[in-house]
Image (cartoon, rainbow, N blue to C red; front, side, top):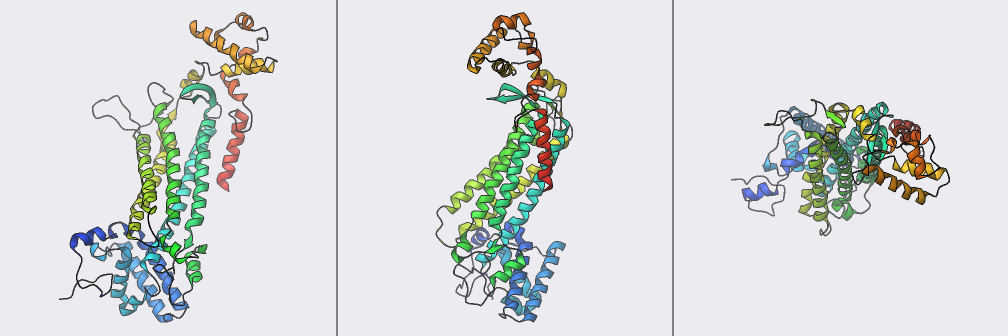
Length: 462
């Protein structure tokens, strides 16, 4: 009785224990790469024909068979199981069923080591482009929201203590800037992802007269690896992506945390709409910010994948080791998690929350966030800033003891504190003026914010 077909040679007489076969197999998750495996294999077949390693007729047969497999997969009729071990062998086996023995020539001058490296890079560069597009959509939502709230004020915080009032648009555009760095960072990762390892073989290259530049051109790679050992064992590009993905999640999680705080009864800066909120199974009055909470929770998941990849790579000798099979689930899950969180946060910011301008205005009018402006007022009149700073500290202390705000002091009380105070102190400490006055480049002044919006729109059109 013939033993089941294996991916390896007749060096082996027995078959794998079923549990070990299952443990060893990656088909359960690397089927995600099938379209990329087919694309890479088509290019490899064309190169074999181009260099005369196989005939043009054989090359055409291989490409036609591979495209038939693509059609079958998309139609749902090609769904290999664990007996195939991995997606590469599954494709090759089905190809041989379709075109006969010529299918066995596809693997000439190629190893699964350079094959999987090629597939993974083709996959990731597509996903990088998709995530960049999602970042642009997220940025557009932030800009659209910011344009509605240039002159809406929100308390600004340091140490989660009231610090100085801000334009709400300025606050939102801070996240635009974070997303812009994420977009640019992914572009850098793309450059080092878009390098072809195809033709590196198992680790040492091949004896066949292949044309690596030809396959790289067919597949749209910008360059080829110059060292075959490095080509099959490099996962720097995946680690870089996971690092970039982790930073995207950091930024989404920070915004998520703010939305959660803003929606609390203690803050009430935003209301949650029914589009993105859920209720309690026992408390009928509640609206829960599940979307931002999930984003905040999923952030650690992506961090974990980065850590796992770093730990996996740190002790691997050259070249390929089976440990590298573990890169895919981490990479695939990180990609899908980032994409899902970006989509959810984009929807949340577009239609899941409503800012409450009256509540925000009341908040900025009920604290001492304008204290710095009193010190600046005195400094502009020639009082040394440190002296003015100490004086205002005493004023705040006095107001607190009398349950007053700075705006509640009479002009006589101001002038008792220092003769430089005049009636214009009230305009200087009005929250709108406090914000408008911060007109330095990159500041929260309304004119600066409008310029920042122009720059943001220009960025997105580049």
